Amino acid sequence: MPRYEFRCRTCASTFEVDRPMSASSDPAACPSGHDDTVKLLTTVGLGGRSGSTPAMAPSGGGGCCGGGCCG
Image 1 (cartoon, rainbow, N blue to C red):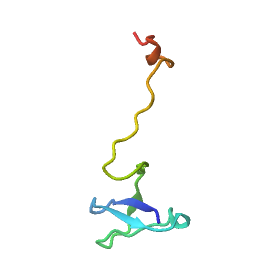
Image 2 (image 1 turned 90 degrees about the horizontal axis):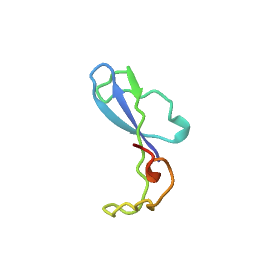
Image 3 (image 1 turned 135 degrees about the vertical axis):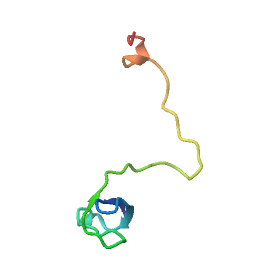
């Protein structure tokens, strides 16, 4: 189930809520009971097992900086 991060505008705490995607835009009360919260934009890490080394992109020419035209 997706986890969404919220910030309370009243007490400035950040908290997470697990809920289905169909309820992703529903409001969430902070753990202290305040209702003035906003959903934060979070990035999702995708990849293999925890602790594994991320795969590197292949190197080579192409693109502006790969072609030496960036000054």
